[in-house]
Amino acid sequence: MNWGYARFAHVRRVFSTRLFLLAALASLTLGCGGGPQVNPALLITDPQEIEDATKRGINIINTGADPYAVYGHTTKEVNLRVGSDTIIRTAAICLPKDELAFQVAMGGDATEDGAKRVADAAVQQINRQVKFTVVLQIAKSHKPEDVTFELLASDPKPYPPVAVEPPQFIQDISSALDPDIPPMAVYGYNVSFSTTGSPGFPAIDTGATTLTLMIESGGTSTRVPFGLVTGNLGK
Image 1 (spheres, rainbow, N blue to C red):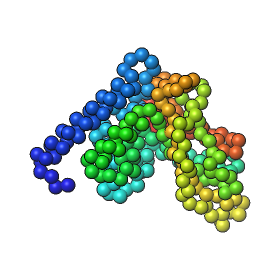
Image 2 (spheres, one colour):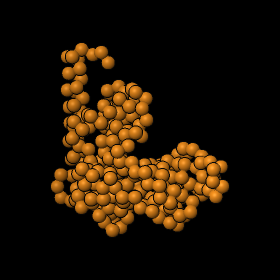
Image 3 (tube, rainbow, N blue to C red):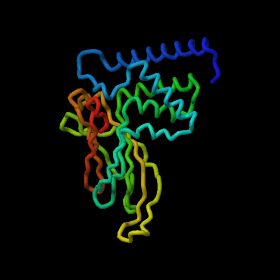
């Protein structure tokens, strides 16, 4: 945009003020005292971080880049089998700044006001949930909807998901080169878990140094761990 410097400075001040107020509201909503606090690695409250992530999302829209690329640095090439029908190809933990950029990009509105509306809603959700993206290779004899997910944190009891989006078909896998491989297809999953706690499940606080995604298919479960220690996020 070819704005003059004065106009740009004014817009930046307004935008930053809005993001500051949004961050303050998020902090109050999460609670400033009393009960367990959500692990800071799973929160986005800093106004500058919110602004940077929002601009990153806008840039993805303007350049036509793949929004899922924001998860590149936390994506694991897993390649583990779950039972006889399913292979985990990749899995990623969606850390807050990446998830905010993703949500803004998926919103598709590169204007300041449009991106802000998406960011407002996204920050509230991000500070209550952690999302994982998973790519599975599944035998066509198996229903992709039958795959289930759980999450292990510091509490020994696994957390159930609060949202699992319908699996998205990506591509078929040809078995022409290996007749022993049954017909298979690749699907993408987005699954979210509460971080703020719920009856019977504590908040995911600083006691959690690793989040372990559990993927079950055909009665067999496989675990994929992700670190929450500073300097090792997602690894």
